[in-house]
Image 1 (cartoon, rainbow, N blue to C red):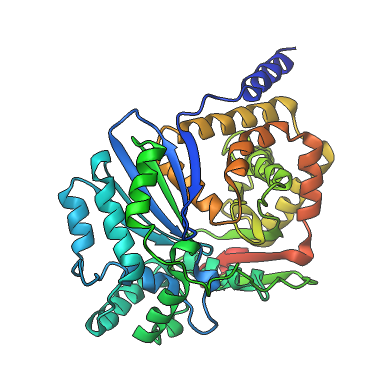
Image 2 (image 1 turned 90 degrees about the horizontal axis):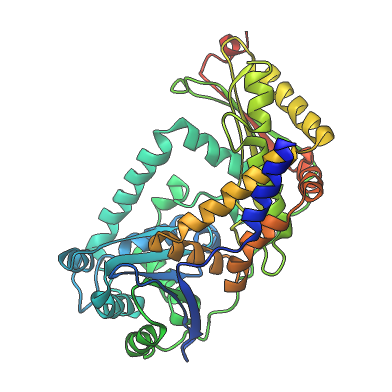
Length: 447
């Protein structure tokens, strides 16, 4: 009876919608700029984030890395703000700032005292339309990006393998191109490329402003009208129209060896549905599937079957992130114990998944996972930066505020049958890439 009682109590906890720490308000300026206000007065701090609906998957063919390159150049100044001065002003006002590029968006943020919000808007609005890309900064900043690629990709065999895996995963869709860009194409990026990309995509009607913290919607509206409202929209901006991934008819396999790899690993990723506006149920089922299969190093299905029942694996996991404009992936990982070949590790992984599909999910485990997910969503609301990130990434990936707010309840309503059905749909080897990573001496590893 105790497991059933625990499961019931957990479900009662998750069914109760938590009080939100931030009140959410949204409106759109006349020039098309969408504004989201996350009102939270617990500290006199504000996070100001400008999200553009453009990422590496929107780049012209042959110009990979231009979205990220432009992100770097956005800090090189305008006629009013000198090179590097933007960050210096933020720091002088006790704040911090940065930016990041993903497949589906590029975002710029500042975290400052609430009474500095107007200054942040003034500077961000300035570089939305008045960026100056001086020729002398292009070569040096390209070198910075290339060094970033060296550090994060070329010097990390796991990153190199992930890059190869994604390129194999997507036969046609631009998600197969690395966000930072292919090295040979980064080397060819020019000032004209950056200016063209900037003029094409950086405009109020292609952006979402998220302000979180100690503000009111009226305050944000007044400031936004003052600083952003005067910027004209770009009439050439249209909804994103990317190519579709064609039907995949055969599994792809990658054998990757590198002397820097100390621990052989098997990874398999499958094409999987993303979270879609008004239809998040499949993504919710896959989110829970990844937690059930591999979310815990001690209690998940893969850990129990591969690490404890047989001890043939020293690590097993599953992963999935549905916040994506287009089709995403679901992944499985196993790291074989010493003396266990990669071939046997893969076979064991397949056996564990097949057994799971037949055995189903323990009620208490599912209830516990749902409670943990609900708790993590509640804890996220205590961090205004994380909350602004949640809304910005969702909205630039095609979701709505209503979708973000409905997500906890959709997770709570997902059943075991939903999860097993989603698993059977996603585990299609014709839509999968399986990778073996190993030291250079592959023969020695498989003995």
